[in-house]
Image (cartoon, helix red, strand yellow):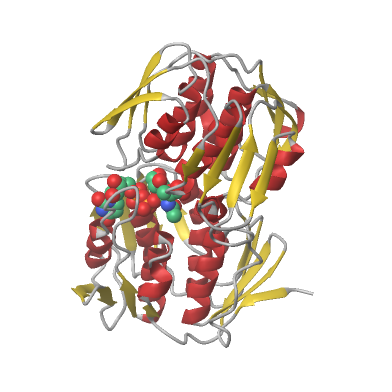
Length: 446
Ligand code: EPZ
């Protein structure tokens, strides 16, 4: 029987079973990783597809949803508050709007996760108005929403900022297609505009669109619902508006950041890891850099990817984050953990977020030699890391510390692991199945 995660009458429904927020992860370093690991569905795709359900007259059935993640639970709670019925069973999720119960995404639900701003475009396009709390800054940077607002204004929406909320209203006859030129690529703004444009009158052209694979996956989901979209995954997307969208079924793409994290873990720890359900096409930038560092992932039968490594020190290689198809900012922290033990120095340049080096001082506590200057960090590889108590500050920083713990001498305790639960499904079980010595320890930060 389907488990009702949350629905219109139960806005306070609890998130899926999770441990205490202050639990920590204890890792004893030095084990090689061997075995197979299945990559879950992409968090950063599923969160947007869930919002797309607001656009449909019928039910949207999503498969391969990482329903165990905290972010998916947060989005479920927000959609339930708006009146969407969300039923989940395993990795299957069905979302249906019977009757919208609110146009407002309140601060308490939005502040937990920025991905919630993606209800703005769908609410406005289908229901004519939306009130969404400004998400504010977060640990990795200020993260403004000006591009989202500029895009919706171009379709004719009246958008105001008042009392910490974005209030957007569509013209009486609905949104109207337009040409929108983004001055810089934004994943979220492209997605909000894409969803709004599906129900706008006439053609919308999105120039300077972000090209991340999650956008192409969202477009495929919208197309299954009856939307007419060309060019998603390129920098120019054309959308022909339609009067309504219908229910559909869509399989969420594999999580390329989770896959990349496992690849880096295997390269660091040594051993032989087979990645199941990864889409290797999405990982070309990482594969190239891993090869330069001395570990070449190889494709295997059935679409699997094998990462085999000795666990010896990698070569230092410079990395610079960039919008897709460049090296993803969401893998920068993990790659820095790899570089911490490299033979040689490397320059890490972060070009997407202004404050995404919080893992650096924690890695230094484990013996790494890293100097941060502005948006660049010089990592001088050391022969080995030492276990230490460390503090997770955001999702990717947390997992970087876990990877460092896998290769450190002695015991590492990663505190505040609730960050990890936002984006890595069953990470402890997956690590243990590969032979890592990892356990979850309940309790307070001492
Ligand atoms: C998405 O965030 C992801 N989140 C992020 O993943 C990811 O790091 C990021 O894309 C870049 O790939 C989700 O998909 C939920 P952006 P998003 O808009 O859409 C600036 C993770 O760890 N900007 O592409 O918020 C912005 O400040 C997370 O899973 C504006 O200036 O990212 C940043 O510098 C973290 N104005 C740059 O653009 C705007 O209106 C790119 O941000 C919007 C963005």
